Length: 230
Image 1 (cartoon, one colour):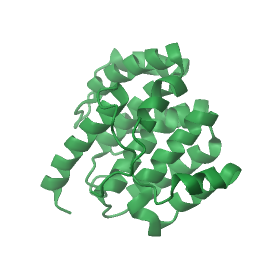
Image 2 (cartoon, helix red, strand yellow; image 1 turned 30 degrees about the vertical axis):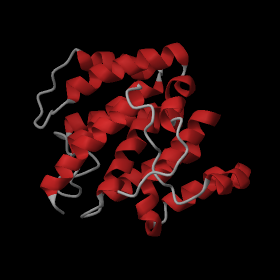
Image 3 (cartoon, helix red, strand yellow; image 1 turned 45 degrees about the vertical axis):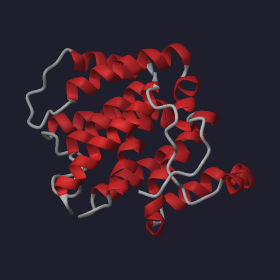
Image 4 (cartoon, helix red, strand yellow; image 1 turned 90 degrees about the horizontal axis):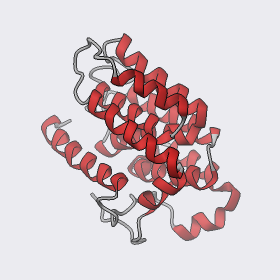
């Protein structure tokens, strides 16, 4: 894997994704999930199981980011869904064990962790707190062990931190407030405190207006056209 080019791409992608959530890029297009809007509409109650099945199929790897995106929207529209939470847990942990993954899959892992709080509700919050604490105790050697993916364990940990903020749950906010008052003595801290600060800001917004109202318009975007292939 070409790490320099991946690092540059990661910075750009995270900037774009951050802009989408902050409202700074309202015309951002959702990634391709390999399934049309018409087909999704026809699936009805089978939509979520179908998307989960596709997410678990390695043959759909080029669509993983889009599938995570669609499942995020489904959870925001219908409320916490344990099926999606369990699918995201399995997806992230399975891919973290691989020797090499495409950049788009790394981003799908990142997005899944960011979504876990509102997708899984209280259970999702517990999972994210465990992930962050594991990163501290194990010196940031979390589920994504060093050398398995180019996205570092600390970046996935920061995604979990932001996921706590997007949950809007009091338990998550209390944990984030505790983290904001500490300075963990571990290497590779990167943007941890910055992620905590942002997460607390998002938490207040979600608590005020609700995850659906705050996040769904930013995830969907006004433009329904298919994105260009990367």
